[in-house]
Length: 268
Image (tube, rainbow, N blue to C red; front, side, top):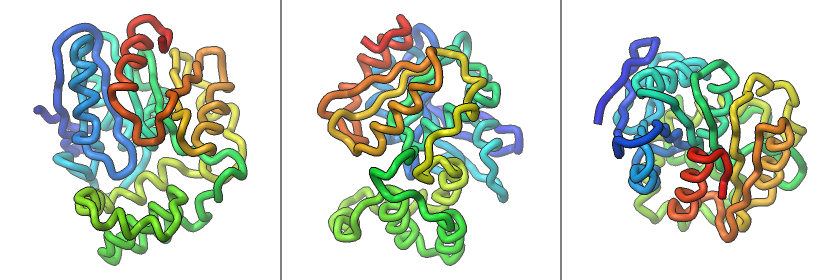
């Protein structure tokens, strides 16, 4: 384990797995700490030097008094600068949106793999409420972390309310409450990309590196539709379906595809 210092002085906690080949950095999604990607990191470490890190405000990383998307990009840049040689990124869920945004803003990356960035580009599910970020900030400001997680799962992920009770009885709930103060961050990060409107064609026009856009063959239709639309933004984007997988993808299904893409530029 090691830490890097971001541009605003925030410490970002990282773990290195393996010591061969190019460096692959794993970017987690909403409510995730680096523990979520530990199994994937172990699998990829046979072929790469893998850096698995906690985004700011999560796990062992610090946080700053004011959030801005650029600060998270700066965090990632600090991790990239610590790495040696060419760097590839893998981003999961909102971490995919962050990784894509970072590359668009100039982060030094040679290839990029994304899995199910949670864009909402059509009517297959309700859009994010227009006041989502403001309401989430208000809930977190009151210290009601269980309410914040519930609001994210229902308004953010579109889960039915009756599904929440069963999740609250699992060990993961306490971990989610611990990272709930970062929920407004991901709301800011996603911006208007969950509005139900098509993706802006020029938002990521600066992304010219090879991009793999993965989605689950057994997952939510809106995520598959978003991945396919994103993959239409340029010839450097390659869509890839993972049969039988949902949003919580099996790392054993994911690792071989990432290994092939980061090594050869092709997912299989």
